[in-house]
Image 1: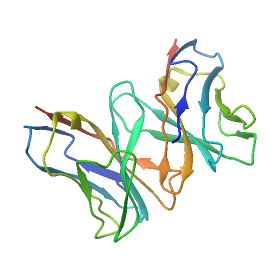
Image 2: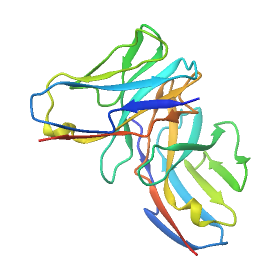
Image 3: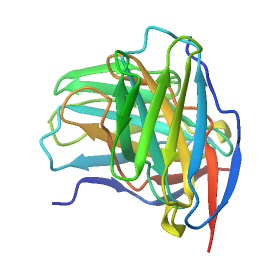
Length: 111
Length: 112
């Protein structure tokens, strides 16, 4: 089955810095890779996704990079703000209706 | 527009009791799913549905039943609760597929 791992379980940054959250995956058959943000006491919230035939996608202050050769993706957050403090999950979509969530990375932004 | 609504938010059960976690969405989403989240772990898929009348098992379906009689509702039933089912449960829906899910606020279940 799919396994998803994160290189850094915790990440602390200063407000205004850029943040990079990494994720490794094992199933190369995934069609989509999705990043979710989960604030304390809330359900996960969709941030951005990337199709497997792309290597970069940009959103508002966020960029996702996909390297299929080494089965790695990253989420870059520009000018990190205190409101970005949360747990971030990468989730490969391996087949219709089945996402596999990693254990998550805790991002803490210090004012 | 309420999005995905889960009830109850908190529940304490004794081992062997049964209960139903309710999930409703008002976005006319075809796809609905249930996840559980345990401390230090990501979300694990329990059951999902791609439309009314259709359900399928996820990664950890044992001990849980679901049905999808309407597009709006996707209840999760625990027939005989066990302490191992203590967890936070999230319902999620999307227009189609699982790549852009809208999650509910979660239901925290404790089984004594």
